[in-house]
Image (cartoon, rainbow, N blue to C red; front, side, top):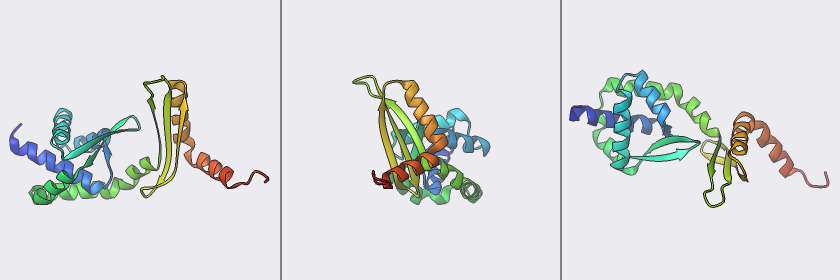
Length: 177
């Protein structure tokens, strides 16, 4: 791939993630880039890896998904070179962000993930309810099996509003009520 395309791809990804103002999952980035026909899957994966290695993007494991967020170096690079992204591309990304940010943000409002504890073989499940980047509730429980962890994750994602309401109601009710 010619070097100028590699640089353009990197700037495009920096611009997309910065405009979204949220970390994006690998699948969200892949879906947009392929739909917009900016690069193929393999080029995207290589570009993401290079950007993480170069310190322009940070990669996190969250909810059994890989998410990417822009670093300070990525922000600074984009500030210097943003005008090198064609206006038509910036407009297309701005429209995508405007049309999809709310739906992507909703994915963050109710989260549940689990991970194994290597020392004793059990699993930790972390459930959360968030609103506008504010933590409303986080619940962390330990269970014995992966199946139990998956069940809690599924139930939380399906019933988070109901469970949140019940837990808050129970917490605000005095024992004598």
